[in-house]
Image (cartoon, rainbow, N blue to C red; front, side):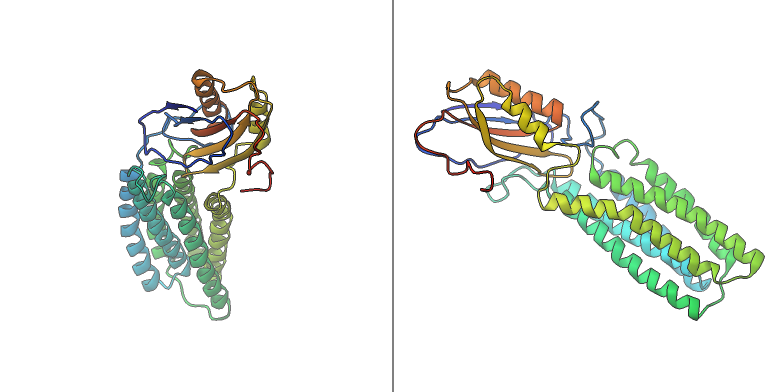
Length: 340
């Protein structure tokens, strides 16, 4: 058995287990992504973002907590469901930012005997929590908006416009804090999309307030609320689906498993391969394991290290582990593709 490690100390390190089968030579190669991120939508140039967005999550949460309080107060005083709808949405964002901040903090912890991959996967749970919470809040707002059509209440147009105008500034400034990392991390991208969406929605609320002042049509308020709800659902659905896929260990978007399999199969000395698994270990890192059948024998540490290097730069897979089998008389129990 020959083991080679290509280890880069950038970000949380991960542990892993291997299957051992009697009668085989085994070679294990391990690689970690040295860019601080292991996944993106595509295989082009790398996008280098700050590795720690924790302080930005915390600052964004503080800004939005103050704004949520203001929206809630003036929404009640002004009888504005549009403001209350946006307050509920922003409250979801605050909780999501706090969850993302907690996940970013936990992800810094290294592997332990119990959590051998560290706690990077908490970032996936934070993204899922954020998406589910937003949809639940939005459902309640939409229900109240429908009720308001049958029981309209007076709305303070000036109040709506003034508070929403502040929201454009708060949400816009918060969105700018996440521009640089939106292509590399689901949590950062979700925060950016929600904050930018909030700024646009706030602009819509300003317009609605102006229309109410001009027309005195109070039904404009629940209409804006329903539009706000539709925008939230539209923007959140993709985050919900992607975060759920991550929690279920689906192959990350932007990685074609057939291309990865083809690349490995074309490596010199590889007759066939099986037990190929590709899954996210966090919102920024991806892992791979595979059994390579190489009848000519162990390929050597240099080749395995180069294989890990190519996977990292071609597919953004930063944690690869291989088991080399020489094709002896003992069959691998994990060879059928439907085995896990």
